[in-house]
Amino acid sequence: MLAPLRFASLGSGSRGNSTLVEWGARTLLIDCGFSVKEANQRLERLGKRAEDLLAILVTHEHADHIKGVATMARRYDLPVYMTPGTYHSRNLGELPDLRLIEAYTPFVLNDLQITPVAVPHDAREPTQFVFEYAGLRLGILTDLGSITAHVEAHYQDLDAMVLEANHDPAMLASGSYPPSLKQRVGGLWGHLSNQQAAGFLQRLNCARLQHLVVAHISQQNNSLELAQAALAPVTAEVKQVTFACQNQGFDWLSVC
Image (cartoon, rainbow, N blue to C red):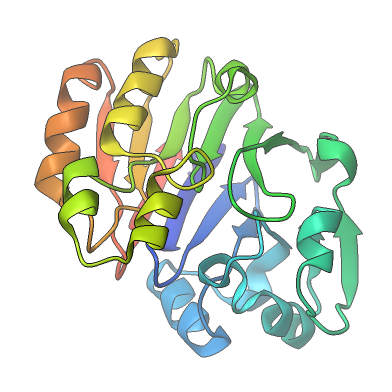
């Protein structure tokens, strides 16, 4: 018997991001930063097909999140949810069923409560999401450069969370990125460092947290060892900590 709520990843990192959320017999795709061919191969690894999807939810317009969205939607006749800013930031062509998320207003999709959360990131109108189903709460939080009070308030009392720990500041500073890109990644509108993620977790009420997935780990400006070391002091009470990767993402995790 399947858990009421479960989630998995097709891949997580600068070369492509996509997450699955399943509740009841429904499956939602969040972002598609892969070609349709590659996304289908990754879906198959997780025991799913594009035909199983109910809709696609988009966080923002950067290529590693939106690359395959329009083609996937057209090929499989899928509704696409995104903010007006995300939609108008790119020419996505005709979408079969565009549903705009206006003013970050929460909505319900087949009994799944979806709360869009505004985040500071260098995109037109980016959003992250908190999902609620059968009394369970899952938060996905990547692609933001700083933690606002608004973000902190929305991600309390979760049962599961996907959280970005993108870079180690010392690796970023000494790495090969040009200065402008270093400033962007490490800035208030860029990506969370290991230390920012750890500080955020310290301020959350994690008493219910069954799963923490550490995601969007940079292959150039971070390492698994550095991320683990930074987060270990604040994750001791979490039942299961998983580190997502670019090639495999992470397998299904059940929330009960």
